[in-house]
Amino acid sequence: MKSILIRGGRVIDPDTKLDGIRDLLLEEGSIAECAENIKKEADIVVDARGQWVMPGLIDMHVHLRDPGQTWKEDIASGTRAAAKGGVTTVVAMANTKPVIDSPDRVDYVVHKAEHVAPVHVLQVGSATIGMKGEEISPIADMAAHGMPAVSEDGRSVMNAAVCRKVFRECARLDIPYLDHCEDANLVEGGCVNLDQNAIEQGLPGISNSVEDVIVARDILLAAETGCRLHLCHCSTKGSYEMLKAAKEQGYPVSGEVCPHHFTLTSDDRIEGDANFKMNPPLRTKEDLDALVKGLREGVFEVISTDHAPHSREEKHRSMKDAPFGITGLETSVPLTVTELVKTGILTPMQMAEKMSRNPARILGLSKRGSLAPGMEADVVIIDPDREYVISSRNFVSRGKNTPFEGRPVCGMVTTTICGGKIVYQEGKKFYD
Image 1 (cartoon, rainbow, N blue to C red):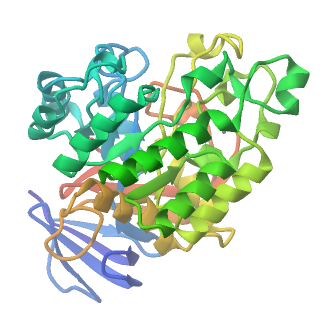
Image 2: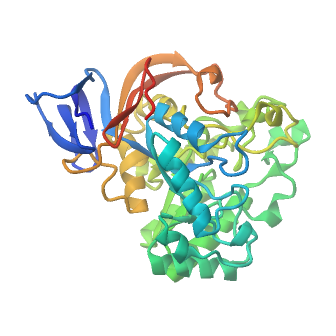
């Protein structure tokens, strides 16, 4: 394995609290040294002057669509998109076809990723067999095959008794539950946020209570069972308030916000454009302000993408008929830099915490999320001042479904290193 010397970058490491101009030496897949003016020779030298050098990003919420829907995305295309976006660890959701609800299906993804993925892939297992909400999946067996967490993402386990059993098993195994909070009985065919825009456009709406009811229920179940609960794609003011209160009570909870929810509101939706259709939907300015406040305060500890690719044909359907979801792996860095860091809401250190260190801690990845010597050599280099316009034509992902088409941003990933190998470099695009 070739050694890599990253010279002169602004090294930002929330694990060691380092924020300064340093060189970083990578050898044999690990961080070997971080210091000023490293004199050692290296096989590859990367000039990082004027750029941020951070631990490789960890995206806790990605849909790779493999197995079963590989015309939307597959492990190869999705992980290449991740590498281009600075993500070195992808946490893949279980709502594939068939559902990842057994050890052999976990193995399928793990083994395929070993052959085609340039970055690490961690496969989540479903809470219940077939995601039907009835019979609990063999969680312990899946965990023994490398499953890092449990999730029924795409829906909630509506039976509270079944959900509590799942939480108890997660607590026993000390693995987190990644929670999609949606009361199916309250959705009532909704496809956008329930507000004046929906009424004027004649569209059925999704109220905040759809999310908030399950947030409240599952926080209580987590407090009772001791399950480490992580709230996915939070979108409402109520989620912020309840998560904040739960953390103040010492409950084992954490939460994430996606870039589209801290950037856009329902007022930004273009009528009839299903690229603006996601679940949970774009909410109001009041909700967005609460999410941003929660990110600033640390109530929300994680920024994840909920990367959900679909085909152009699917997204060209009506707002009612098109599937929920947008792509996110290749836009999360510029949106976070532009909307949160350049505006002073987050520091670059806090960005690294929410996109790398905190996900590593929640998932129990003791060798990732840090640039300390001895840690895995997962690194992202970002030019924070590079200005450009988002264009889906440049996406590596098969999914081109983005509401950010044509949006000016700043902050570009220039190099991604995973396991000590350059897996993406601007203009060269190495994939190993």
